[in-house]
Length: 172
Image 1 (cartoon, rainbow, N blue to C red):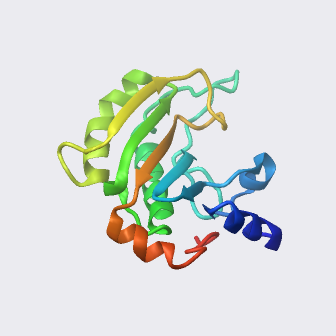
Image 2: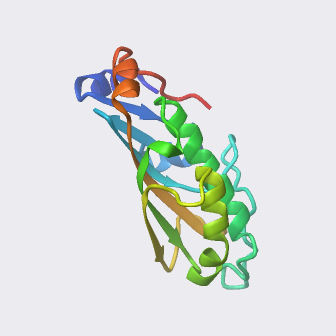
């Protein structure tokens, strides 16, 4: 991250988090932004620390996913990436108040979402609003799912992290 970006974030009372994957610079965005007690997490997908997709779907001759059996693995990795981002701000998935799952196949997502979400949130009834939306395409052809999150910090966590202006940006 360049110095002027850090200063601009501090002036605007924003904290940003990045994974340093190639598409952050290519598209020009942060993985997550914290403003006040709210954390906005950009659409997360299943990638490792180097930006390689985890469990990419196989593609047919037209370049579209040929099958959706990798949905569960992609969903698990996506929640894990979101948890890593939230941790940079002192939050966990428990702080999530809303999530939106964008999926290429609603049936395949519904078949695994209940189990994966309950494991990710560590409870049989996650306490967040949730939307599951079918879409025609996502950023990468092999990608089956993308999830956005909004989280709120508690009073205790908010005051602890507000004392450090940039609790960390750009960690992996």
